[in-house]
Length: 118
Image 1: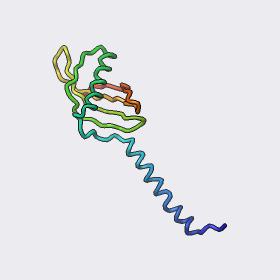
Image 2: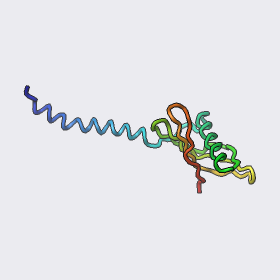
Image 3: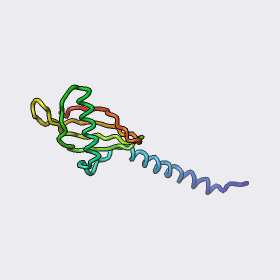
Image 4: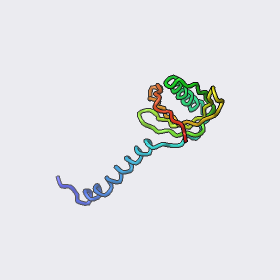
């Protein structure tokens, strides 16, 4: 069986383009994307979960105020990176924190981080 050299050359030219396009799609799903509706009940639920988990670990008594902004990243589930405003019990001040929560495909949530914004 004889292979046409033109077919071979076409494969050499177009195959990398298809592979790159596929890799780019994968990269886009792994990059952080803005959350369009930060008032979505699920986003609020994620923020409240993060505050509750942080309070348990730190002994703080923060209360949820609002989600200021947020991004999400699709991985094996979804990472949520949110800026949340919290109210302190002692000072009654509102402070902003950046938190990351990983929500697994099963719906289980895992607290990742909670850091004050300078």
